[in-house]
Image 1 (cartoon, protein in one colour):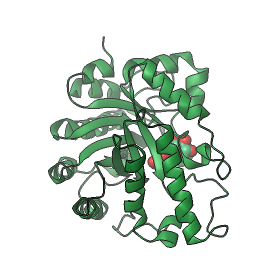
Image 2 (cartoon, helix red, strand yellow):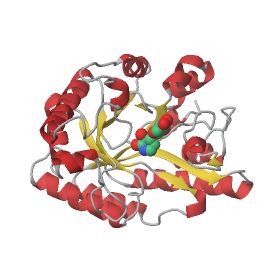
Image 3 (cartoon, rainbow, N blue to C red):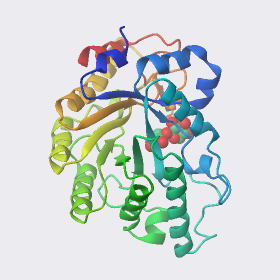
Amino acid sequence: DGSLRAAARGTGVRIGTAVDMSALAADAPYKQAVAREFDTVTPENVMKWEVVEPQPGVYDWTAADQLVDFARKNGQLVRGHTLVWHSQNPSWLTEAAYTPDQLRTLLRRHIFAEVGHFKGRVWAWDVANEVFNEDGTLRDTIWLRALGPGYIADAFRWAHQADPKAVLFLNDYNNEGVNAKSDAYFALVKQLRAEGVPVQGYGMQGHLGVQYGFPGTVLENVRRFDKLGVKTAFTEVDVRMVLPPDAAKVQAQAEGFGLLLRACLLAEHCVSYTVWGFTDKYSWVPGFFDGQGSATPLDENLQPKPAYDTLRETF
Ligand code: XIL
């Protein structure tokens, strides 16, 4: 068959998508496309802390379990996303309500509960998401303020204890090329591994935009993480544009998708390439970036754009 999934077979790189659970439930062609085109899936939202622990100690795995079951039925692996982040945390989780010691206990409990719940069913976890600023300093978050920089190592140790077989990733955006942010990750990974902290993967989200140009040093960057002995992955690829689209933008977009996939295929330990939604019908982009959109490989009618063909041909 002519699917992305078939094209990826045998390359060592899995092809994935973020999945919107409302669309999966309501839209049969969407659901069929998820099953046909991809061999790994990431929940776009339903494994985030605000969804899985709406009240302290009260868990709701319903939607996440549905995705994990869907993946199993379709022979797909699951990328778990995400355990410690500054965003999409429950509203009860504030610095005003808890002491630093209590926050540490809550984070530990959250990681053990979530990774434990999905033990053996989640292939890879984005353990820590977006921990650095663009200049390579640690992002000022509830976790850094309350717990200090050691929260990152703690999160990885806890996740590893809860599921020793899951592949544990750092994950961020604007860290695809060599720059201050990816330099900070390089130093962090080196340090954590020297200390025996179980970090096994470096995730690059890959949220690009045709109007910004694309990083020229992606392969160089991926290869230096290769040499550190960690796996790499493109975890949330989309290539947005200022609307309306035109032929030049759509062609540039295809090149952006291809650039990241080529780097992944040429790297030794790049294990997956995941798009953050595969159809413009459900993409997060228009809601987050004013005046931008058309960021995925299929249009609103699930018809392929040049980016889709580029992905298939690049594999
Ligand atoms: C986005 C989702 O796509 C949206 O539906 C949600 O409202 C906000 O989060 N980086 C990440 C993802 O790691 O979790 C984000 O997903 C996009 C940016």
